[in-house]
Image (cartoon, rainbow, N blue to C red):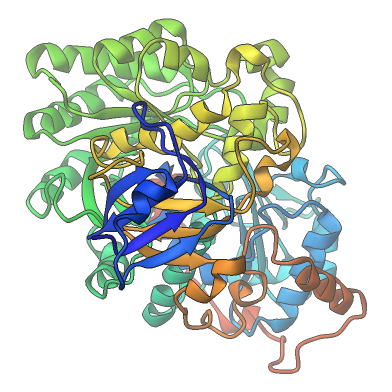
Length: 615
């Protein structure tokens, strides 16, 4: 009999045999039945929890097929996020208030998830503006993968000066005296951005556990029940997976995670994989946490960059000779794999290698993925289909569309990425965000982009030939993404026997105006039949979380997309404009409190080097 029943709902099941329903029953973490209220209520017993959805839309839980939850969770509590903030003035008020409460030697970090185009002012803050609100506290602001803004206190803290070299493919802006101004630019290699970010203080282990729980709850609030983690630079296995493993052991995961392993050192990619193959195998784990194969970095020479402010980079001639032995090993060991590839030129060369390996070691149903694929050509889409691969797309163009149009033109942007052409070719397509640095973790911004074809700044990129209907977009975010973790037979649809992951939405995704799509949240999120988030009438059902740690954490004050409820933003702005500061601690001498060996140029750039690659 049912342990949980949701009735009086408008259910989009995505089950072609039973597309619409009003009630759903759950038992043992699986869907027991989906149908009308009368049918499903027959499964209720005295102990069944019955919830009235009040006519709200209920959909399968959202599944981000390419994100960075594990890394994002470790850092969520000490990052000030401008995701969804619509005014630079409000963003700077948040920054000022956070500076006032942040103790030495901590930094205030705004690390991706926003773009200047979302602000009504259509610009980033100036270095003078940042220095004015933060004269003593180090501030690091990362804008997409193209630049970082550091105040003078941050430059002092890390020791950047006239003798600090520009790493390859990056640029440190300097004044007439040769001193760094605080602007770091990727041209187009983002090495300097991530090398610099890595120098900041880290949260202690206990706080990282707390931080990851709060990040997962924020994803639950947005209706996310599953993700595929694409690894990242500095995300070493198994060390940097200990927090997520601990949460799994303690039954505190509220998002299902399939994780890929990202090679960490240029020239040692094959050794990385050979070592991991002795430790873990694809599918190892359970429905809450499982290993998913290799990537998104397979070899450094095959990875391009998606900074559309800069020209497309030409990849080195060693790409093919570096990539072939890695792909051959993966195919022989039956490890699924994924590769970061933004441009069609990169994809062409990668597919040349794949086809060569496939002739010797047939992929034969092995799931492999091209990630991003913004400018993939029809010919290469067909080549992906012929090798039975999939394409994972993200809403990076929603944040960089204006830059793409300025460089390549509006006509080229109309099919960037060519989602409709991918679907017509029969390629498995999954949707995601690539959060938390290049774009926001909010899935409804991505869904809005797929449906409307507009950037977060309002620019219309696509006509109807490359926009999706709402049910199509939802399918990419649910059942479509399940293919990318080989779970397409149990996840992403609401039908008997499948995993009981779903959410009850704050507004009806199927009927509300286009302009309101990005504002949707979840009023009730269920993972494996267990309530993991509740809001509004379902608020009392939400499991209690400990407060964000530490007490100065931005997540404690702005712990949701858009910076929190309006009352929080108003109060923050009021404090900032009246110069009120936190009396809990002083803010002098931040730079003096923290030092790093930046004078060891060989060790500094050599040690961080390619591991800082911008994923």
